[in-house]
Each structure stands twice: as C-alpha cells, then as structure tokens.
Length: 62
Length: 397
Image 1 (cartoon, rainbow over the protein chains, first blue to last red):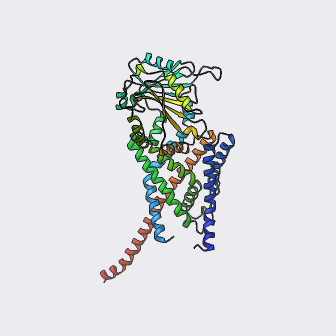
Image 2: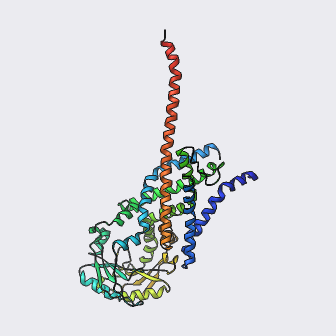
Image 3: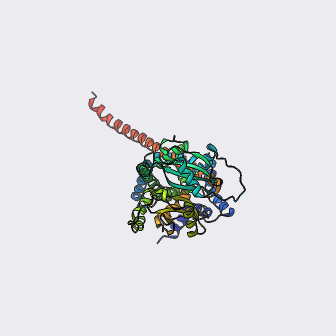
C-alpha cells in the first residue's frame, strides 16, 4: 500500500494535469451535446483554459 | 519506478516520437488551413445565389435528373448531394458505372440552385481538374497522394504519436518529483528551458492531443472499415435480392418519390444524399439514401435508407455497426468544426502549441546527442591523455 507521503507526492504532481484534462474533456463534449450557445461557450472555455495556461507559463519564462 | 523501467519508457518515448515527428509536423502544418477549410473555400470561391423568400421549397429532384440527362445524354448519374449550408445541389455523373469502378476520378458534377433548378456550374472529371491549394493540403494531411497505402501509413504515424504521448505522460511523473507544476528553469541552460517547456506544454494539452491523435488514427481507418461493412453486413443484406433484375437508369422510378419515401421512414432526420442503383457506392437494386440527425451529435450519425429501384417502395433502414458509429463520432472531435469559429481558432492555437512540443522534442534529442558527443569526446580525450603519459615515459630517454 502507498504510504501517506507517497500519495501526497502523487497528488502534488498530478492534480494540475488531471484538472486540465477534465476541463478539456468537458469542453470537447459540451459543444457536441448541445446546440445552445451556452454549450458552445463551455467548449470555448474548456479549450481556452489549456491555451491560456500554456501561453501564461511560456510568457513567464521569457 | 525503477531506473530500468524508466529507461525503457524513455526509449519508447524517444523512438515513437523520432519516427513520427517529421510526418506529425507535416500533419500539424497542413491541419492549420484544413481547420478553416469552410471559410477558405468560401473566400476563394464565393458562391452567389438569387435572393428568394426564406422557406422557398427545393425543386423536384426529377427535374434536376432530367436536366442532367439532357446535358450529358450518354452518361449515368451516380449520386445526388444536397448541401445543408447553401441552397445548392450537386448531381454527380460518370461515363458509366464500369468506368467509375475502374477510376473513381472519372466522375464530374453539375451544380444546381436547389430552389430554381438552374444550372450554376458544370465541372470537368475530377481526374482532369487542377489540384487546388486545399486539395494539396488535404492529400498531405491524409494520404500523401497515394490513397489507401498513404492513409494506412499516416494512420500508423498517428498511432506512434499516441504512443509517444502515453510514454511522455509516464515519464512526466518521475520527472516532476521535485518540481512544482509549471516550473520552467529558464536561467540555467537553453536545453533545460526547452526540456521544461516541452514537458509543461505537453502535459497541459494532453487530453486534446490524445483525442485528436486517436480520432486521427480512426479516420485513417475509414476506408477499410467501410469496406469491412460492405463485405459483411451489406453483402448479406443484398444477397436476398440476387435473383432480381438490375434496373437500367432510364427505367428508374421517380427520385423525388424515393426521397419522400425515405424521408417518411426516418422522421426527424434529413436526407443529404442519394446514391443511384448500380453505383459502386450503392446497391444494384436500390436507391441508397443517406439521412442524418439534426442536432450537433446526431448530425454526425448517418442512417442508410434503401428504396426499391423497381417498385419505388421503402425496403429498409440499414443498421450501422458500432465501428462505423465510433468513426462518425470521432470526426468532429478530429476536425474541431462543431463549435463555431471560436472553437476553430482554439483548435488552430492548440495545433500550433503541438508544433512547438514536436519541435522542442526534436531539438532536445539533437541537443542531448550533442552533449553526449561532447561528453564522449571529453572522456576519450581524458583516456588518451592518461595513456599518453606512460607512452611518453616508455619512448623517453
């Protein structure tokens, strides 16, 4: 069984990637499921988040 | 993870990426204009239509068929395509079905105004048409101009890309053990900065690249998947008709009536194309009508409807197997064309970031080889100088 510190290490590394993946998956599916502008806007947000995240970190390291 | 397992994953990541990178860069670059192909097509070849009151019904298909036969009396109609974006209908013709079977590009079209049945355009056979910019982009993206072998090859490259993504994720965990998320060590060396950026951008976009990669593999398999369906289910269904005579094109029942019959069989769906009896892409004994749903998701799901080509009666709605349904759903998830222009722009930006990840991966491999070469040169030099001393003492006085 994983020790508490091991589990802690797992979440420290994987929380951000898993949250981002969940946001992307929600974005990808929302525009597929609904016609309403709200569903489309959710898709724009869902895929806008990774683009902005990538852009923000890339801009910060320059 | 043990050091040997980590090393194994590194080797998988390195080789799967190295083999596919050049092709993936080509796919990403050609994918950029393809995301906007609707907009580019409208811009390069704007279509103009007479203004008619909204709700003007479409002209009868029988009228379009009669006009087509009048323009090309010695040819056969292979299919009719109804556009749902613009008021236009394409009638596709071929010198004969035998010619079409031998050469798919022997077909040409007549474009009609859907409401007035006025001829808007007649095309040369596909084989004689000059390739447009978008044709070239599509070929480079999907089959490298060599049809099925090209599709399978690029499908394999996409599969390697998916393997590279998965192995990259496996390596990400141990790599980030002592680093907080988003760390980019920009000050120490260019290589380290790009290594951190490669990992960061890769993991941020992970779900998108994985989805586009997997749906890319699926799309490249569409030709064999449709062939499989035709050879199994479709063949079995048509076997019961084998004793029937094959109707000639000039003796076919009304297309308009067949269209209305099919439309009644699938209420709530829209018939978007009609494949004529005898076409290599249809049935010898039926009109084959493709209908699709009206919502974003169901508009991807096509149902083939068969209408008897002797009697004009409804025959069946053909069941689509799960692998073709999966292929249909995978299409919008690959094209990014289901959420308006903003989604397309985001799709293009994600594509650009993928190019950065691919490029940085390639750079890291070259830089690593360089540092390894310098290290090796240093070791060799050290080794040589260590051996040079006793040699000198031996040759000395």
